[in-house]
Length: 345
Length: 168
Image (tube, rainbow over all chains, first blue to last red; front, side, top):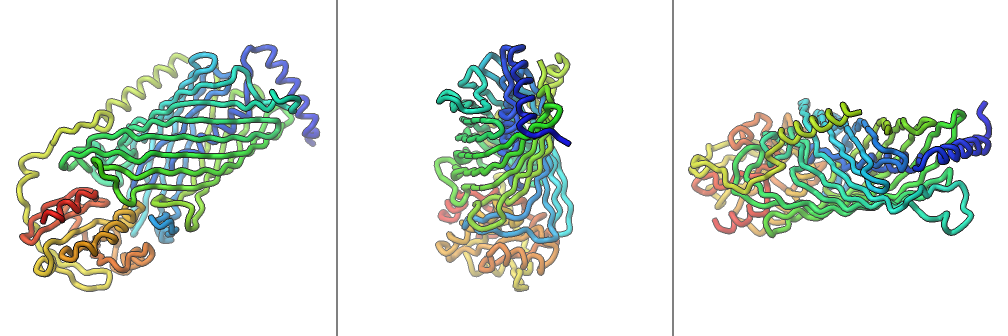
C-alpha cells in the first residue's frame, strides 16, 4: 500500500532540497513535463494537403543536454470547411499520418538554450478503395529560448508575493522547409507532400507556475511565414510567382497535477486547450480568398519522471472537436503521442 | 556523447543537402520552349454525378471556355471550390466543371459531393483517370481550355486564374 500523498510529498521535498544543495542549478520536473508535453501537443496537425512539423524542445533548468524521441499517430476524422461546418470523412476512408520526431536540446548558458526537432513523416491513406503511402522528412524546427528567471520558481507553498512569481520563457523558432512540398523537386503528386515549403519564424512565450502539486501554463506564439518564389508545382514548371502563407497565432492554456510515487518518481497529468489560427495566404500582392485556417483542440497528457529526473516517458492525446465552429479549412484529427526524453550532462 | 553530436550534425547535413529546392527557392523561370507551345486539348466525354454526359466540344460550342478543377474533397479543395462557387456567377460565359479524380464510381462521387455541400456544382466523375492523365491532374490542378480547345492554363488553383479568364 502506498504511503499517504502528504508523506510522499514531504519525502520528495526533503530529497529535492538535498539535490538543490548538491547542485547550483535546480530541476523543475513539473516544468519539464508540462512544457514538454505542451510542446508536443502543440504540433500543427498536418493534413494530406499540408505537411508535418514538430513542436519545440525545452530543457529543464538543471539540464545541460537532452535527447527527445517521440512518435505521433495522427488519425483524420473529417474536416471543417470554410463556413466552419464539420464534415466527417466517409466511414470507409482511413487517413493517417505518423511522425517520428527526433529532438536534441543544448544549454548554451545559464539562461539560454537551443534545440532542434527533425520529424520523419509517413502518410498512410486509404480512400475510395485505394491505399496510398508515402514518407519523407518533415519540416525541421530550430529554437532558441531565454529563461527570464535565474532560479526555479516552483514552490511547495505560497508564503509571500515572491512565491507567486512565474517562470517565463521567451523564444524564437525557425521552421525550416526540409519536408517535401509541392513547390520542390521531391513531390510529383500531392501524396508525396510532407512539408509546407516555406520558412517561418515564430516568436514564443511560455508562462508557467507550479505550486506543487499543481501547475498552470500559458503558451503563445506568433509566426510569420517568409515569402518565397515559386517556379514549379509538383515538378511542373509554371509562370514564376511569389507566395507567402498567412501569419500564424497559437495560444494554449493547461493545468497539471503531479502525483508523487513511493520511490520519489512522479506522474504528472495535465489537460490543455489550444487554438491555432493562420491568416490568408498571399500570391504576389493578392490575398487568396478562403485560405485562412483555424483549429481548436484539447489534449490530455500523462508523464512519468524517474527519481533523478533524467528519464521522462510521456503520452498525450490531442483531440479536435468534431463539431461545427471549432475550426475552419482544417482537418479534424486526433493525435496520440508517445515519447521519451533523456537529460544528461 | 560526442557521437550523438556527430550523428546529429551528419543527419542535419544530409537532410539539408537532400532538400535544396525548398531551402533556396529560385525565382528563375524554368519553363522550356515546350511549355510555351500551344497544346490542343483532346475531346473528352464523361458522366457527371447526375449521370449527365458532358462532352468538351459541346461545352465549348456554348461557352467561351471550360475550367476544370481537380478535387479530392480535401480541406484545400473545399476552400478553392467555395471561391469558385462564389465567383462562377460572375462568369456566365465560362463553364466551370469540378473533376473528382479519386472516387471509384459515380455513387461514391455523388456521396462526396453531397456530404461536402457541392450539389450545385457540376462534377465530372473521372474514375478511369481519363482527365487526370490528359491534363496531368493533381490535387487542386486547374485547367482552362479556350474556345479553340487550347489549354491556356494548367496550374494549381490560384486567383490569377481569374485574370486569365478576364482576358479571354
